[in-house]
Image (cartoon, rainbow, N blue to C red; front, side, top):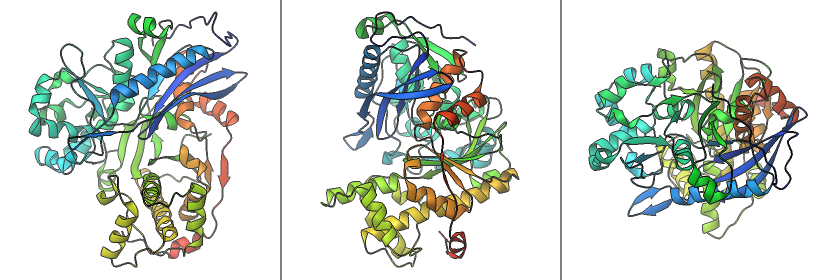
Length: 500
């Protein structure tokens, strides 16, 4: 493995050669941040350097990511980190599936299209009319969703062939940012695995799928493992930002891969929920599981750090709460999250349920109205108050977790006596408690900043400061102890009827 060489931070404010300091960029669907992580005396501490919104832009009916703005904000994070103590390396993680296309001169053909854009609806089914779902799953092991990269590319192949004809290289979002900083075109394993274009067993591109859908094979670059140096800051970037040519480390570039790297588990068989806008509920395996049972449950096999597989379900998570809050603010009711939790607790339990993953809830807009419409169509009493809507959403997510845990146990034959809930959802005490109640197992909540800590941990493993991933997990557990939620009233959840 190509190890990053440490650069000297002489002359930089707060410089210290007593510890390792790395810069972790974590970009999510609603915002991004640059975080400095310092490793000293067996502990990892983190410090926010720069935070910025990630607002998509609608142009002529298409929802795009504002990539030039994101790149600008990443550069600002590098500049601010330089002035606040420097850094030894950089790691970048983002959401999955979305990508940019480069032309033969290395220019970006268009801003990357947002996975929530409506153009992709129905295109997974159309791809499965060409390649059977069984074959697609046996090769890639990935959950079927319209937002997957394979669906997006099949759309372009059929509806916008002019774009694909001009494209020479496909880069997922973190690799696209790294390319703009280094000039190197590479694809990290965990982010590649999200697109349903990677052979889960061979850990290489699924050339049979790519060829079967008649996608241009030249789009796809060399796949590299987490912990590899993907490049160094280019001369132009160093001159522009006033920094040395530090290495960019290919961390677990899918944000969930970084988050799972930071799960403070003390055993190999553990269940986790990486909870934010999405909930990623799964376990860590040493090899993909793509048998008939896993196919029937539509469970995904995404790449993990350390040669592992993230066997998980993608579940819409706190997006429903976040978007409901935005809708009520548009209507003049600007709730805090604390007020929303209080309103939910004052509403009757188990009044109605939704399927959080129903496509009707996928796009921005009036989520509370859609919840009421869904319940009415399902023959349930629609929630009347805002508190009842919130409680319905929370209980529905927790019930979805319950069913997912049962599916994991059924597929793997393993028992998971605790659920590690990491990410922003670990702050949500109501969700954590309901999860423990619904699943009837303790929930270990935290760390909140799991993605940043996992990103930093891989950089520290690459530099040789930390021996391996399980050492990193022990260090993270000691640095950021989780909060334990024990199950209560589990019997009441057993009686609740969840038929969606």
